[in-house]
Length: 353
Image (cartoon, rainbow, N blue to C red; front, top):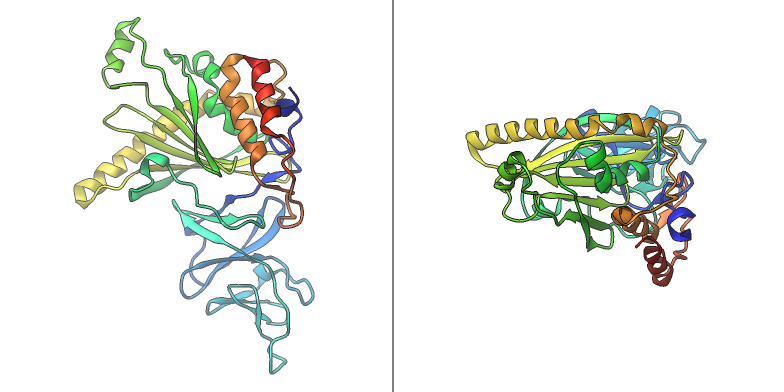
């Protein structure tokens, strides 16, 4: 069971999947503002220039090490407070007031994406991959609102597996159906687990709710970069979508932000309908989150005795292990080799079946 327990990236405080991580709420950064951000062990600044485009740079000026968050946005660049050196959106020094020409100096610039009311920063050396999306809504315009911000006293990997832990839906949430979560690879960065079982017909209540599903009970979870997951659930006529964007903290915990998403509907009635759907989505998300809070305050995750029912969790662990990984704070210098080949992973699955 070495590939499951002795992992290189999953549940490791000294490793990070290379990918997009949320940094700030969009409404926390107005035009002309600069904010300090510490993300996955790295000190950064994020600012908006006159064009409204968010920019992320390493935090310290290459002249004497002043923190650039003390500086001032100038056009679409940023001036250091200390000696007023100006850096472009690409991180290059473009002006030094005491000289006729800028010096050959630069700070590292990191790609920024803006989606769902959040600013996301790309970590790592690889070419950028897509920002997280909900597979069902990939080709649709969406409305989104931000839900709860939360902290859990464990690693983001452990928080992520909760959504595909089929056993706990029955033991903690008293769900009257036993979920079977089947994986589907979306792309090299994303994997989706979807339930394949129908609502049972053993009681009047389950028969009633079963009428709202033509096939299996709708419940799926799509993971991006090991730390962002989107849940889709609800009857066939109305699906609810909740994104959980997570990031590790310096003390080994998880800070998360929930995002409520629905397909965008046009017109005044569409706007009001979307507001109602997003409000219902928040209620649904709070119901499932409430029962698990205590577990995440005390858990010391160690999958010592895996069962067949844990197969989805094991496959998620394997997915994380296959992702390009870096060391927090050193996003370009600590790429890890992938040492677990398919044969090793297959043997791990055989042991639990």
